[in-house]
Amino acid sequence: MVSDIPKERVLDNTISVLAEGYQFMSNRRIRLKSDIFETRLMGQRAISICGEEAAKLFYDNDRFIRKGVVPKRIQKSLFGESGVQLLDGEEHRHRKQMFMSIMTHERLHDLAQITKRQWNARITDWEQRDKVVLFDEAEEVLCRVAFEWAGVPLKEEDVEKRAIEMGKMIDAIGGVGERYQRGKNARIRSEEWIMGIIDQIREGSITPNAETAAAVIAFHKNQDGKLLDTQTAAVELINILRPIIAVGRFITFGALALHDNPDIQTKLKTDHGRYGLMFVQEVRRYYPFAPFLGAKVKESFTWNDYEFKKGTLVLLDLYGTNHDPSIWDHPENFQPDRFADWKESPFSFIPQGGGDYDRGHRCAGEWATINIMKASLEFLTKQITYEVPEQDLTYNLIRIPSLPKSGFIINHVKRLS
Image 1: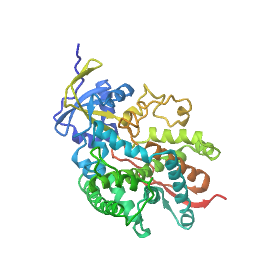
Image 2: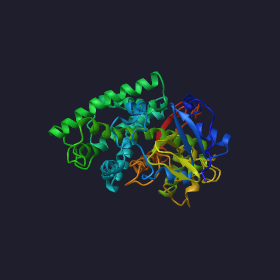
Image 3: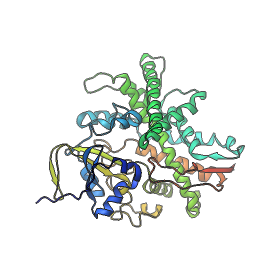
Image 4: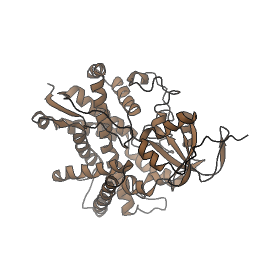
C-alpha cells in the first residue's frame, strides 16, 4: 500500500526558499502536519524529509547518490566543481580517506594548539582598540590557523586578503546578485592561487611537512594511480581551508550564547573539558549553520509507505532535525546540559551532516570544528575579560548563512593574569 506524499500546489518554491531561509521546510511541515512533503525547486520535483529516521534513510548510499545534485551556482562559489562532496561510491570513499588521513588525533591536537596561540597573539592589539568586531577577528585568526595547520605558506601582508576571499565564498551560499558574484569571483581567484601552490609543492620549491593537508592532497593519487589534476587538488585544499574559516560563525554565535547566558559563562571559567564540549555541541545544535542537504534517488523504493522514484531530488532538513521536538526536549531553549547524557547518534545531531565518517558523507572536518571551537571559547572565557556594548545582536533566520547583525562587538578587552 503506497500513500500519497503531502504536497504543495505550487509551480516552484525556489523564491520561497530565499524568502524564508532556514525555516522554509519547518514552515511547510507545520502547515502540512507532516515530516515529509513534496514541493518543486529550481523547476524539479523535490521531497523534503526531516528527523532521525529520515537522516538514516538519507545517508543510505545504496539508495541515494550525490552526483549532479549540488547546483552549479553552489559549486562555483562554495564547494568547487570537482570536490569530494560531489562524488559517490568507491570514488567518494577513496577521496574521503584522503581527508580522514589528515584528521588524526595528533594533527587535531596541533590544530587546537595553533588556534590557542593565534588567539592569544591578538590580545595586545585588542587592549589598545576602542572596539573589536569579533566575527571579523575570528575570520582573520582562523585564516592564520587554517593556512599554518594545512602547511600553506601565507605572507603577513596577505592574511586579510585571503580571509576576506574565503569569507566571500562562504557568504555566497544563500546569496543572489552581487553577493553571489563576489563569492564566485573569490572562488576563481583562490583556485588560481592555490593551483600555483600545488604546482610548487609538486616541483619541490615548497616543502610542507608530509602529514599536512597541503602535502597529502598535492600527492594524493586517484584509484587509477594518477595524481589529482591540479584544479581538483586546489579545490580539495580549499575544502580544508575554507571550512576552518567558516567556524568563525559558530564562534561568534558562541560568544552570543555566553552573553545571553551569564551563568553558563561562570561554569565554563572553571571547566576542565566536559562542560566545554557540551557547550560547543549545543552552540552547533541551536544556532543556524547549514540549512539542508540534497541527494537523488538511485533506484525506486518505498519507505514508510511513501514511494521514492528514481532520479527524484530529496532534501534533508538539517536545521529542522536539530530542532526537532521528537528528538530534543525544548529545542527552542539553549541548554548545554542536554548533552550530559546524550546517547550519541550520527542521525539525530547533524549540524554538519550525518551518517558515517569513513564510508559515508558525514563531514570529515567535524572534529576539527569542535577542537577549534573549544580552544576559541576557552580563550574568550579564560584568557581575557571584555565588555559588550549596546548593539544589534539579532540574527536573521531568513539570511543564509546567518550571523548576529553587529558581528558581536566587544570593548575594554583585558588580558587575564
